[in-house]
Every structure is written in C-alpha cells, then in structure tokens.
Amino acid sequence: MTPMSAEKLEVHPTRLELLRLRRRKALAEGIADILQKDLETLIVALVEHRQRAHALRTQLYEILNCAYLLFTEAEMIVGPMKVREISLSAPPIEFGVEVSTTPSVLGIQFPSLQFTKEENRALKPRFNLLETPIQLEEAASKIEDALNSIVKLAELMAVIREILEVISLKRRQINRIRFKIIPQLDATIRYVELILEEIERQDAIRVRVLQRKRKERAAKSV
Amino acid sequence: MKPLKYKEIMPRVAIEKLKLIELDDLVSLIDKDLESIRSALLESPYRDEILTISKDKIDSLSLDEVLLENYVKTFKHFIKFSSGDIRRLLLAVLKKFELSNVKAMLRAVKAKMDVDEAMKHIVPVGTLDKNRCRAILAGSKSIEDIINSLLDLEYGLIMKDVLNERKRIEDLLPLEVALDKAVYQGILKSAEELNGLDKKIAKGVLGIEIDAINVKIVLRCKAMGINQDQIKDYLMPTSLIDEKALEKAMKATNVKSTIECLLKVAETAKNPFYQNIFTQILKECDAPLSRLEVILDKASLKTSLDMLKEYTRYYNIGFLLAFFNLKWFEVKNLRCIIKGSERKISPSQVRKLLTLPDAW
Image (cartoon, rainbow over all chains, first blue to last red; front, side, top):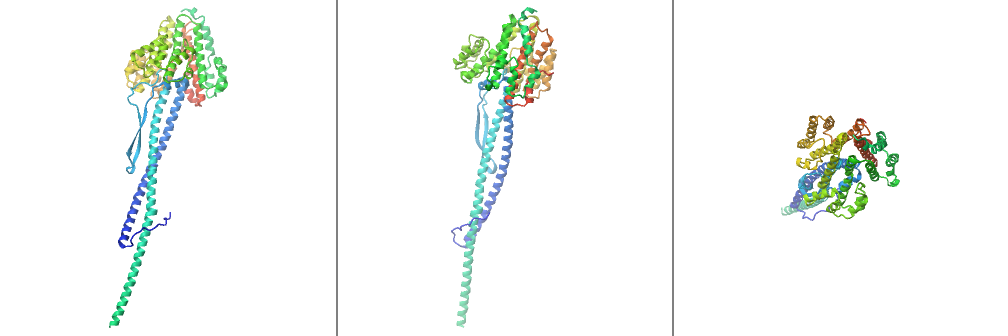
C-alpha cells in the first residue's frame, strides 16, 4: 500500500520543532506497533471464538436432531395426538437469560449470557408417568440442553461481533497512524529539514560574504 | 370352570384372533408409504374404519384415530357377547380408554384448546360418547368445571376428593394419578372376583401389565432423582411385585441397584419369569431407559403368547386377555410404522420401537 499524499502540519521550522516532530513520529510508530500487536491478539481470539462457535453449532444441531428423533419416537409409541395433548397441558418451565459483561482479551468487556431456569419448582415429574413415553421426557430434556447451547452460541456470536468491532476500530487507528499521521509527520519533518538546510546554506553564504568583505576591508586598510 | 359362559364369546375371539395381522406382513409395512399402508390395511379388520378416511386426507393422525376406534369397537363387540364376571372384568379394562377421554378433556381445558380441536383427542367409549364429551368441553372453562360435569361418574367423585384435599390444582398430575389408580384398582378387583383358573390367569396377565407399569415408574423416578416418599404417590395398586418389594427397590441409590434389588426379590420369590426379565434389564442397565421399557413391554407380550400356548383355547379367560393384548400390540406397532413412514424414519429405527416377540 502506498502512503497517501500527506499534507504537512503548520509548524514553525525550527530545530526545536524538528526534534519535537521526530519524537512524535517515534511515539506514533510505537503506538502503531502496540495497536498491531493488539490487532493480532484480537484476530487470534476471533479465530478461537469462531472455532468454538462452529463446534457449538455442530453440537447444537446434533442435540436438536436427537431431540427431534426422540419426539418422533414418542409420537410413534403413543400416537401424535397423545403427545400433543400431554405436551400442551404439561406445566411450563420458566426460562430466562441473564445478561452481564466480563472482562476478557485486552481487558475488553465482553457480553456474558447465562441461561437460567426456574429453580423453585419441586423435583417432580412433569408428565403423567403412566402414559408418557420416556422418549418425550428425554426429548424435553434435550430441548433444555439445546436452549442452553443456543444461549451459549448467542453469547459467542455477541463476543465475535464485539471482537470484530474492536478489530475494525484498531485497524482504523493503525491505518490512521500509518497512512495519515506518520506520513504527515514525515512530510513536516522533511519540510522543516529543508527549511533548516536552506537557512544553514544562507547562513554559510552570509558568513563567507562577510569573511570576504572583512578580508577586503583588511587588505584596503593595510 | 364353567364352559357355558364362554359359549358366546370364545368362537368370536378365535375368529378375531385369526384376523390379527401376521408379524411378517406387519414388518413388511415398514418403509412403505402411507398409501401402501392404507391399501394393506384395507385387507385387514381395519377396513371399515379406513374407508371412512378420504384418500387425500390420509395421515398419521387420521390413521391413528381409526386404529384406536377399531380396537375399542372390537372390545365393545366382545363385551356385548360376554356375561357375568368376564363382562365385569372387560368393562373394568375398558375404563382405561374411558379414562383416556377424561384425561384428554382435562388436558384440553388446561391447554385452552377449542372444542373442535379437543374433540380430535376423543375416542368414544362407554358413557363418554362424542356428544357427552362435546357438551362437557363446551360448558367447561376450568378443571373444576370438568370435575363438576363428571360428578355422575366415578371419575368426577375421585377428582372431587383430590380437589378437596389439595384446595387448588396447579397441574393435572395428582388428578391423573388418582384416576389411574382407581381404574387399575377396579381392574384388579374384577380379576379378584373371578373364580379358579380364570382368577389365576387374569391376575397373571393383568398383574404383569401393572407390575411393568410400577417398575417403569420406579425406574423413571429413580433416574429423575425423585425421593422415595414421592415415588410411592405415583405407584399403581401393586400386583405380583408387592409394595414391600417396590419399597426396597425405591430405597436403592440408582437405576442399576434398583434393578438388582428387584432381581433379588424375584429370586427370593422363585419367580423365573421376573428373574428372566430383570436379568435382561440388568444386562442393559447402562442403556437409555427407553430400552429398558421396551423389555418390560415385551414381558406383557410374552405372557400373552404363553397364555395362548399354555391353556385350553375355549374354556378360560387367558385366550381372551391374550387376544386383547396382542391386538393392542398390533395397534401400537401399526401406529409406530405409520408415523415412522410419515416422518421418513429409518427402517432399523422403526423396527427397534416395535414390540415383537424375542423369538421372532
């Protein structure tokens, strides 16, 4: 990538300013390096989270397939009407999702989702033990697992989105430093150096002219 | 033994027994589409009911309904030709289906289904015909309304007692358990009222069904981690495996030790039938509970098949009870095949869920 044509900064072309500009450039390069390392860490975290999300999604499909198969088996055993009748009249379980944040990679606050289930419900069967095929119980339990996995997957997706946003921000910051601030500083440094060189050259000519004139005056007076 | 009381009913049972679908034919329906299954069923005793469904409306729901209707029709047919204590026993067993309608109405009201939707769950049996059920559903907005509408039947009174005890019904489980217990109590009482060999056979066949239910309840509750006192509330009246044996099993810490305990009880009682079942279950105790339940279901089928071989065909209740069990397993297996076909379940999976004799 070629650097953008940079405009120089409005500064006084002095030696002090040149030193200040060089310090600013070194600082900008340091910041860009740190940001680049952060970016690499974030990319590693993104890849890890993506792999975890992929594994979790595969696991979720397996759980859902298993739950669906168990539900179908329950229908095969007692008939679809009975399963429908039992399912619709079973006491519902209250589920919820608690949202919080936890510090993670580079201290960034990542969203944390916690699947919650009503706990005050006494331990007792939800369905009629005599009529309900065990497959329906197992399917219900699998669906609970699936809900848990869905919440975990949602958390991972939220984290991935957060990481992507931070990566995009870091990339913009790095680009701004590398392709705007540093070239601008370079241009300004070059400009100040040129001016200072010009001043030096003029001073040198002026010294030589003065020396020549002094020599001429000395020769006349002798 | 009174052969005369079997005069009317047994020839009819023998004819119906011959009409049962051969296992080979039944298994050959696996993996067939619904239309082929319908065509096959047109050549079976289900023909009349199948013809009531139009070809384009055929699905697992409609087929399931007609299979149940056929079973109940067969049951009613035999009740018509039975008399005395046999009739009383059959009426007691039929109450299982009547109760199924009561539960369907309770669940429909609980789930706030509309009347037409709820009526799809009703298979008219006994005093609970379609009109009565529709009237009850139309006039009931709460569980209490259903209970009050059924006060003329024993179901209403049983539920009223539960309601009085609990003041408030949060879920249907206590009501359903009380109703189930009453029906099975009635069945056992009717079996007890039979005489001689009939009594022994009826207690054997129906007892194994009830024992299997109780063992399933204990195993399921153990797997859920439900405590012993609570499990007792869900148990049906005990039969061959008595309360003491079940209590011992309930005290066990997990499913495996529960089965070991039941096996020990069967060994002490020198009951080879149960020994064999619990040994089989113990061998597979690490398998899912559904597999263990299949073994228990097969116990009932095995008893029925043994009955057919063991006792003289026409002069005892064994043949009749065995026929009803075999017919019920046929309905269950057909239902399984039909749903499997509709959902495109693999043939091996469907076969696993069928209740077939071990030797087959």
